[in-house]
Image 1 (cartoon, rainbow, N blue to C red):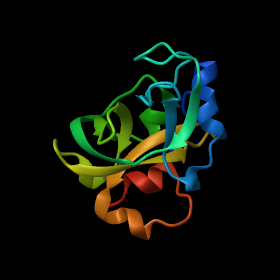
Image 2: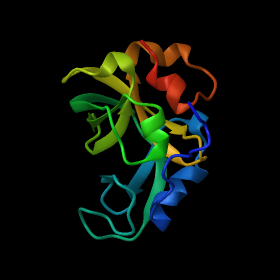
Image 3: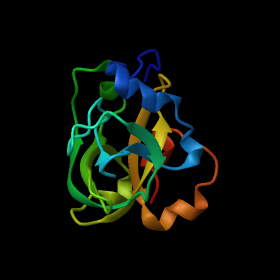
Amino acid sequence: MSNSALPPQNRTPVGKQMSHLDPTGGLKLQVCEDCNTVQYPPRELCKHCLGTKLTWVKIEAGGTVLACTTLFTSLEPYFRERSPWRIGTVKLDCGPVLMTHVAASCHRRDARVHVMLARDDGGSAVLVAVPESAVNGIGEEKSVVELMALE
């Protein structure tokens, strides 16, 4: 396997702000200062009240897997070299539904997970759903591939 390929780096300007967040500081998402609605994906206006005062706030990262799939092929060289690759949607307890990478043991619907901010091999921020039981033992920053291997 060649490690020359990097994951796709296309992000919106607001989405790139996630890459400046510290992954060891917990999951941070935008929250509207006017109505307290948690936002995802990152945006310029609140999805509830159209307010413009959105700040990055540490939120509770517990949630439930809504759906999960395993990709066995990809047009992106990075993922093609590392397939199979698990992705899924997670509904956070605080409201939003996130598209995440999914750890090995979290592949079933209704699994309880903890969503973590991590860096991909290109340095961009990504979200990874890991087992709730593994959160206390993780400690220092881990790569996406390391997090996805958690049992």
